[in-house]
Image (cartoon, rainbow, N blue to C red; front, side, top):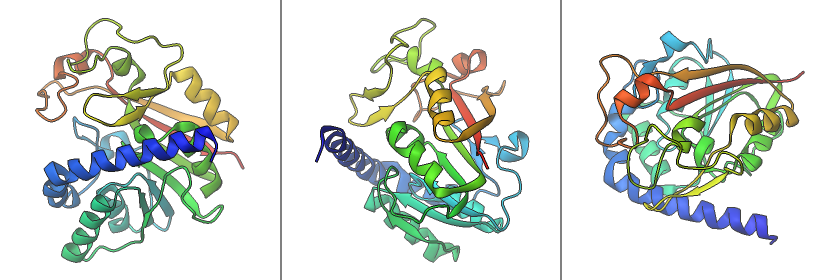
Length: 258
């Protein structure tokens, strides 16, 4: 195994352990609430898809969700007539997804696999989506090429991630500040004290990577916290006041060139 593959395997194992713990602490408990959503709500401020309209009509589409977690996004897509497949590396998260399938009757395939090497067939998807899954927990230099491989010509990639700005302004433990903490040049792999490994790039590198893998960028949605938003207890890395002034999250929409 070469060093890059070995590091990827180590990061995947570390993140699977982190999400096994998180699943026991809160994601399994919250799964029923998330699966019951009438429509997907984007990000920590819960901005409705009907307001942002980044996915459009998904009926009849083959969809792959990379880093699906408890798969509530895939469940929402399935109820709208899509044919989703959820991919995740954490067995505990997938077990929760299967429990929710049994409880709700909404069913679709789940695959335990790395988002950078899913094992799914080439050109098998019309839409690849990642909502805080592969989009921050897998190396983009691995999962973006995999998304391109999975998509048919003309297919779309939609992913939600922390904004580059909030990462640049975030320390290890305190909420995002109004000053830069990290260097932008060279940003890529971040190890946080709580145990996870995240991946974040500056916008220029995202554009280069997407275009190098055959994508045309259609939208970059910078999410603003609503006027009545309150700082989350769980997601306290950023305050609502900060996020009303600067985007802490962003949604990228790209299309694979025909």
